[in-house]
Length: 159
Length: 269
Image (tube, rainbow over all chains, first blue to last red; front, side, top):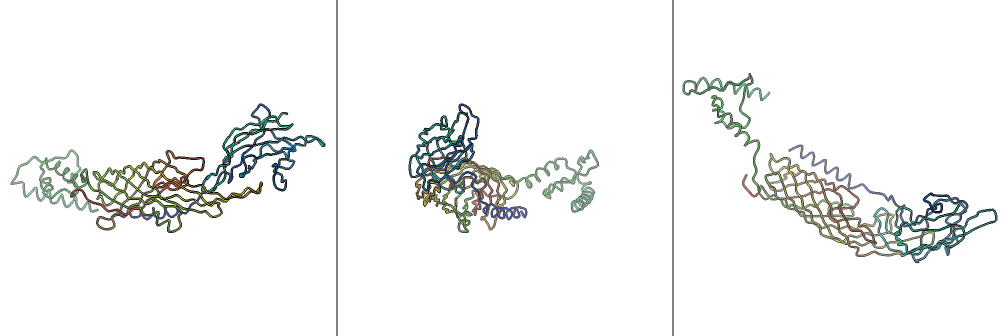
């Protein structure tokens, strides 16, 4: 019976050790749609050079990407509206600049992810629309935007 | 050493007894096939030992049966019922833990081996983590578990047990996430919102190991350590539960219980 009592004491110590442990957030702390760039008609990822991305109507006209080369980008959506527009500008030559406008329509839904990652808005995408003269097309591949890191929108470019 | 002394002593008694009884009784002596000296098993009654030592051939079997009765005590189908309270988590909550489940449980001890168990309890939680943007509140909700234990110390007294067991648990509950502060730095947006009355349910399984020790008369204390996993739980567009009554935090695979229980004997042992 003595052994049983030793086990009893060991279990008490184990409880105190486990009760003090805690977790971490391994996802994003907010829901952001990940837009990835592909060559037209393929699933080959491409990098777009000299691109500038800004939100239309953003305070201070601040840039998300400033004349950089990118192959994917997280585009934060407005929680207080149901449409967010983004302007993509491309410097293709020294004095030639092309531009596209990406319009995303959605519902913002309050969402509790976890104690570690917190509460946020999820975005249920309704449609995406692309207008302009450089990118070819756009498609939704993940209609519910949560704090995961999966690709939500594919944007296709001609060579 | 003690065993050797006992063997020598028994041999001396045997020789003496044989000499004394030789003139009174005529029996066929038991001749072992080898040089090994057979001794009565420990715990054999004195009367059987006497007959055994005289060389009575039937006494050997009786001695074995007599000893087995002592070593392998057979408990009745309905040995006892234990009713207990698992109270560790309210204590841990008082020390700063954010959640608690408390339950009463009844265990029917059958043959001091197999023990069907029913657990009924209440679980709740409230947390506002540091550096986070919300308060999570799970309202007190009921849960139930059924399962059984297998007591590996079935040869010993029921007051001391070491067992393995399984459980199937279910709970239906609601939770609120309030005072959420939302901030989008790029769009310079800030807002607060609440998500209230999110209903969910969960079904899960547990595998456990435990011990039980007597502390005073019919009163016992018991520990279990439990590895559990969710079979299914309800997710909604508003979120996933963090806390499940009777299970604990959804992402934590280990659980503990600490119980005080009272045992009611169902038969005289």
